[in-house]
Length: 371
Image (cartoon, rainbow, N blue to C red; front, side, top):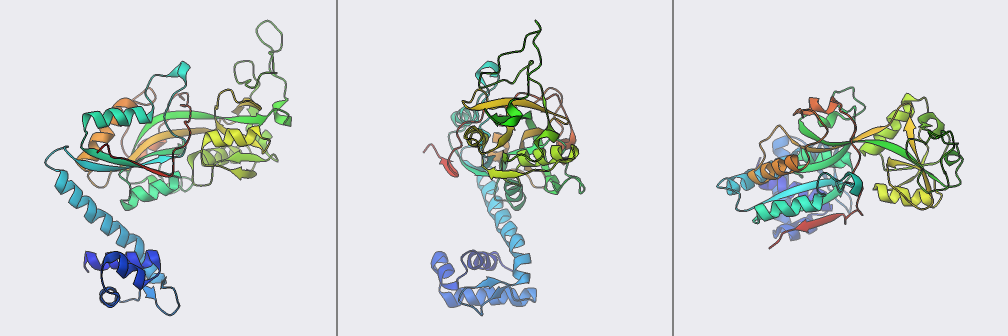
C-alpha cells in the first residue's frame, strides 16, 4: 500500500469522479483508476462503486476512508515536523475555534487579552510561523483533531465531560490533552414580554423591588429561573454537537424537562439577537445589556459550559504547534487551581469564571500569514 494510492482514493471519494480527480492530481484517468484497483486488490475489497454516473463509496470504502485520510495527515505532519525540526523560523499551525469563542473578556472583568491580540503577540515573537483559523462545532473539531486535520482547537464542552465511554457521547476526548480557559454559567435571555421574563424579582436590601424596566435584570436582586421552567417553551440554542447545546440538554434532563429548540444559531451574539426579536428564550453565556431582552440566571441545576484548548496527546506536536500551545496556556491560565493534562482532566471542576464576551464571529475560514 502506497501513500499515493491512498491520495488517489481520497480524491476520487471526495469528488465522486475519476475524471475530476485525475485533473486535480495532474494525472491521466486510467493511471488513477489503475492505482486504486491495485489498492483494492491488496485490501481484498472494492472501495468504489463504479456502476453509476457518479462514483460512490462501497461499505468497505466508507470504513477505509477515515484511515486513509488519517494516514495522509500523519505523513504530512511528519514532513512538516522534519522541515521545522531545525527551529521555529517557519511553520504553520491549523487552529480550530468554536463559533463566538473570541476569548475577549468584558471590560469590567478584563484580566487577559482577546484571541486576536494573543495571536498577534505570538506572530511578533515568531514572524515566520503562519496559522489558519477555522470555525466549526466542537464535535467537528474533535474529529478533525483526531484525524490530523487540525493541530489545536478552542472548544466548548459541558463541564462534566471526561472522555469516559459512558460520558454522554464525549468519547472523542480520549487521546486529547485539555487546558481549561473558562468555566461559564449559562443564563436565560427572554424577550421582554415573554412569560418567563415577568417573574417578580426578589426584594432588594431596603425591602423594595428592584427596577425591572431595564433591559438587563441579571444580578443579586433577580430571582433565578428554574431550568425545569424552560420545559414547553421555544428555545434558541446552538446546534447539536456544540458544548453549549449539550450543557443545556444535560441540565434539562437533570431537571426532568426536555429541550424544544426551535431556532439554532452558531454563536452567542446571534442567539441573543434572535431572542430579542421574539423567536424564543436563548440559553447562552451572559450577553450583557441587549435591547429587548431580560436576562435571568438559571438554577436547579446551573448549566455550565467550559471553554478549553485541546490538542492531540497521542502524537508529538510539531515545534510551531508546541510553541503556540505554550503561548496560549500562558495567556489563558484558566480557573484557579492546577491544570491537569490528559482527557481525565476534563472531569475536573473549578470555581466558575465569568465568560468572555463573544466578539462577532469571523468568517468560516480565515488565514493569517503576515508575509
